[in-house]
Amino acid sequence: MTNSIKSPKVKEDTIALEEQTAQSSNLNAEQNNLAQIRDILFGEQDRAYTDRFATLEAELQQRATELQNSIENRFTEMETLVKSNMNELSNRLVTEQQERNNSLDNLSDELSSLSRTIEDKLNHLDDQLHVFDSALRKSLLEESQKLSAALEQQVAGLNSAKTDRTSLAKMFSELASRLEQGAEKADS
Image (cartoon, rainbow, N blue to C red; front, side):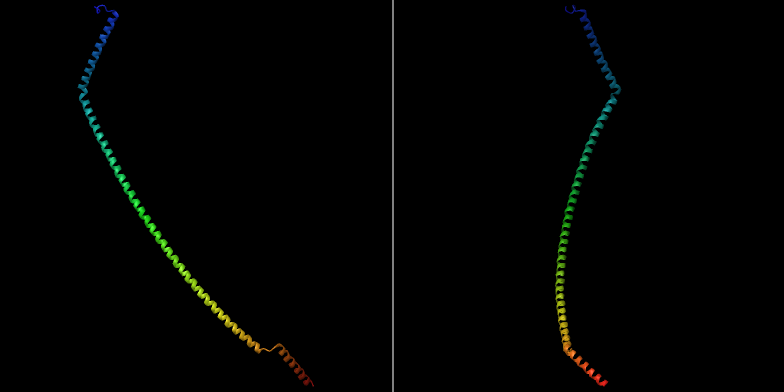
């Protein structure tokens, strides 16, 4: 009874709702039909594309994994190579440093030896110079003494041979007086 008493507005709403439901189910049915038609027309291609995309994605994933593994391996190899080169360079550097230290020690020893040799030679030359200087002084002293003795002999010889001034003056006076007397005698 309540159904027959419905107001016209409610009836309209109910009809509209029924029409919408019918349209909606028609739309769903049409969409299902359209999906079936699409599946019939393009289903094979869609599945082929889906399979192809899945295959490509798997290949891409595999290649990305291989590339990552390859990069990791190369990085590991490069790291090993760098470490090896660094160790080799470090060893060469240590060896070269040791060789330089040894060379420096050898040069230092040679320099010390050369310095001692030069010092010994200088001391020897200094000793020879002192000996030569002493011999020269002694020789000069002896020559000086000989010359002094010879000079003294000469002076003594001259002193003994020379006459005294007063004696000489007397002798000249006497000679002058004799000459005067001889001249007077000759004049006379």
